[in-house]
Each structure stands twice: as structure tokens, then as C-alpha cells.
Image (cartoon, rainbow, N blue to C red):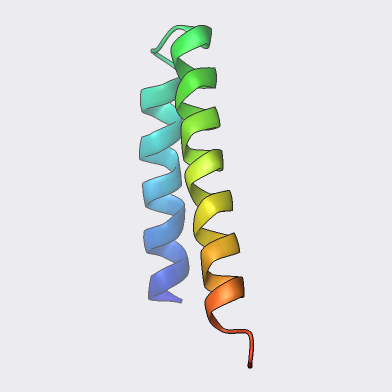
Length: 51
């Protein structure tokens, strides 16, 4: 339960910060984070594949 409260608190803080940024900066940051997560997921998936 505490983890859920902490996650919601962090989400609220991040969304509050993004609301004050211009749309282009928000979209650029979203794209950069999304690409980083995609690269991370691909690297994790390929490293765990049994040989």
C-alpha cells in the first residue's frame, strides 16, 4: 500500500512539472524516455535468452 501511495505521489509531482513546460519540450522528453526504455527492454530480453 505504501508503494502505491509513493507511486501516485511521484506521478502527481511529474505531471505537475510537465504541465508548466511547453508541449514541444514535453514531447521531446517523452520520446527520449520512451526510446531509452525500448532500448533497455530489448537489451534485457536478448541477454536473458538461453543459448
